[in-house]
Image (cartoon, rainbow, N blue to C red; front, side, top):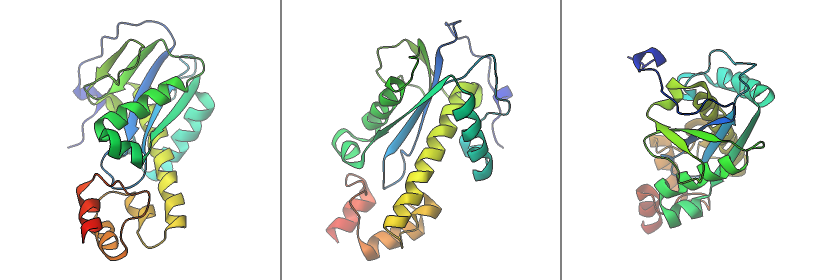
Amino acid sequence: MALKATDFPALDIPYRGTLLAGVDEVGRGPLVGDVVAAAVILDPTHPITGLTDSKTLSSAKREAFDQLIRSGALCFGIGRASPAEIDELNIYHATHLAMRRAIDALQPSAEFLLVDGNRLPGHALPGMAVVKGDLRHPAISAASIIAKVARDADMLALEQRHPGYGFAKHKGYPTREHLQALAQRGPIAEHRRSFGPVQRALSS
């Protein structure tokens, strides 16, 4: 059964200002492409109703919310870490690098961070990690949507450059179709060399 915001206790956030940024990422599990993070400061005078975890929304609803967030938020920022950075740093540290880049892209700057997960990304700003935060606070939900739509667009563009791998369908995750294409065609430059299936394809 899917979790809902009402399944969690209310958040006690030690910040009462308006420059609170929700932060989330997408793309830790795929074998190819950037890990993408987003940071969003919503406008408290113009709330966007219905925001929730991007994974629970259809593609059409994510796209619609993406447009609402981009036009209605006080600001948003997107940050990426490349496959080379993922291979060098590991996916955990690369994810936090992408988050810091998203936070630094905010104009105006945030004063407080709400970050999905159980760890803060090492930014200088004060903040709070929130497990299942994309279900529990609209700013984190908004960040999850912005990041997901941005990364999905990356995968559509990658499909255009490298047809035959199925990136538009599986978005880089290790599905049977992706693994078969990887074995038959070999990795492309955007594949993450430090991930096991890619290593095996390189050594075969």
